[in-house]
Amino acid sequence: MTNMCPTKTPMPEQAPNVRNKNFDEVASGYTVEMALNEAARCLNCKNHPCITGCPVSVPIPNFIEQVVKGEFEEAYKVITTASSLPAVCGRVCPQEAQCESKCVRGIKGESVSIGRLERFVADYHLQHADEAVEKPESNGHKVAVIGSGPAGLTCAGTLAKMGYSVTVFEAFHTAGGVLMYGIPEFRLPKAIVQKEISTLKKLGVDIETNMVIGKVLSVDELFEDGFEAVFVGTGAGLPNFMGIEGEGLIGVYSANEFLTRINLMKAYKEEYDTPIIRPKNVAVVGGGNVAMDAARSALRLGAENVYIVYRRSEDEMPARNEEIHHAKEEGVIFKLLSNPIRVIGNDDGKVVGLECVEMVLGEPDAGGRRRPVAKEGSNFVLNTDAVIIAIGNSPNPLIRSTTEGIEANAKGCIIVDENTMKTTKEGVYAGGDTVTGAATVIKAMGAGRNAAKSIDEYIKSK
Image (cartoon, rainbow, N blue to C red; front, side, top):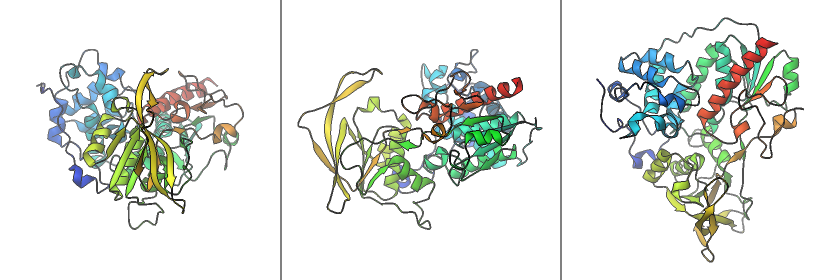
């Protein structure tokens, strides 16, 4: 029987004043009873509009139908026909702006909680499934994947299921890309990421870490080693800065560095000797998910006051509503319509403040967002001992600068055919943030999946 409750089944969470002092996952996930209750809200619409909102086209009504029946392993099989990382997507995918935004139940109430159900199914599988994974029969062809973030892992997993011998080359000492270094433990436990990666390894994917392609090996040398195609999924790990006075002071971090030290280098654990400032007053500049992650992480490191400094209003913030809500609950202070103009330092070269100016929203810019304009004489200073810059990232130029024939646009993003993900170099494909600039995990996965299909067609046509 359909559950006609107009609201989603609530997700159990740690209390805000408890979770802001630890790095344990905020949400504990649905129980079986909760999952069955929420799945029963799905109307199994004739036209399945939710699928059109999913970048990897997960057969959403089909997997939810299996949940309703209590067939959780069957639900997992349905999801993994389209997604290689369901436990990850169930946690960090912006479903509210994608599949859930198309849900018919959202017209007169709240949409079905597709993301929470995906997480439940994936977690159930990881906890209960037989460890055996059937490795596909080899088709005799080799493909190289550069980067083990969501785009690279998805491309690798999709190709492995087709029988390709896939080697993933990762620059860091741990596979996972932004899933490991960028997203905090309290949003995405690293054990979950590694379990998903272990599944790919059982499919036959080989992952080589500490391999900086462009330094250790070139793309051309990969072809010489017998790889018939190369996928570039190196992300956008080069942080952007504002270019204001004082950005070189001690205590100024890019969000990338701050989060990498915490997430990948475990700075929040006492047994790890990871160099990091444990500030008391922190200003995080930016309004996206990365800014929220940095601010919430700073709280958990013991900061007393954490400010989000953003030059537009909350309506324009690109962060997920859930992340903004959680940040506010945990005590992050929002300084909206404020723009930094100078980082202030002391005689020792350490940060002691951030000078800002108040803003007002003017006429819309080329993207349709109202342009912030400084209010004359409105300068003010935040007393801070750390400033974290989270205003976006650009693709690292290493691959394109060491490979002849790969073209990029003015922003440094690799140019591809949007339908095939093919670059301007024969046999080389690319996808994810290295093509789009910083975007979502699920969009990167969609690009990896599309590229895998194109690579398969390319190799078969040779």
